Length: 441
Image (cartoon, rainbow, N blue to C red; front, side):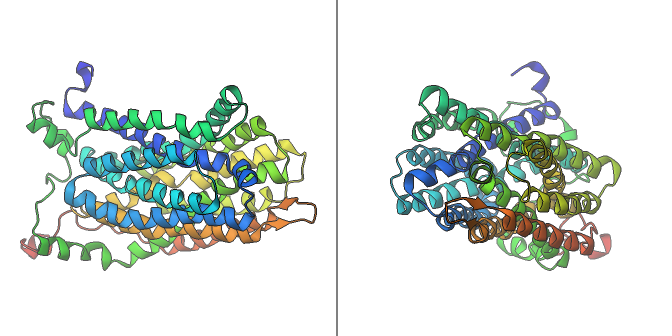
């Protein structure tokens, strides 16, 4: 590491970049499955309903893991939980190349969901520990671009590897993907700690007070009873549940479109392996800039999530509806709508995950994020499953996805209604209920 990052104020950006890179590796594993899904479906002779079940069972395990991940990160530290998570999902990814039937694939998807599900909430907790509150919107937005960058590059990379080195076969690609997993493990072990305070105590960083800015109060050490009572800060807040519904809908649309996009391009529009990889990447190239724009708007312009959310949700409705109705061969309109979907669906991603760290005390933000994301991820479970039943299969084997994208548009409309209802009243940034004089709050 260069001298410029030896102080905590600079090193936090190095930590953010490493967390970002490791989460891209996380996405490589799940996106590789979705990229090759139409070809896996053909090789294993799967129906659209079975494909939907494979996608959904991953998100069910992922959602369940989110809830425990937040509590584990608060209890044992973000780094330990992330370290175990990446080890598990790297191993499962390598095994995916050897899958032989639907039952084996279901088991591996559950394993991948449990591994990857224990990664997100600890990463948000680590960012919360390293960045002052005034910078968290931009920090989380940058981190959120990992799930724009990865879907943008993964289809191109994995299809190119398959086409160039393995004559179009998909199985060997999953063995190759174990390599970046090992790299991620090494990066976490060498360069990341739970907090700047921990690295300063070990003499690896020089002290800089700016890193610990959050109304002048570091994270408190609380007893089990104090911790239990502190959960009431968000569990008794109605806005937490409205926010969770918004997140449910946003993840339903994002993962619904991401799950079925390659099948839509191959079966409805007849694209080959290389063409599909390029078109499937298009929405996520725009998504990177959309996420950064949303975070910047939240921090610098509107200072709230709601306006960003409304632009994203309302804009998603017509473009999703039209995407499913594009005629085969009209690649110009298809590409245009894919780019618009990438913008509107992803605009609110950075700001939505900055909402809880801005609203609640850092002592419980890991638990609040894990619980909200666990419930929200059920949207990612439900959406691909329902979509599998909405695919219309013709007598000659053709597939029509128009009803699928209408379904996604309706979910976006529900999210817009919830965003209108949502209030953004900031909760006191200290835990006020236990050992403090209430008159001081």
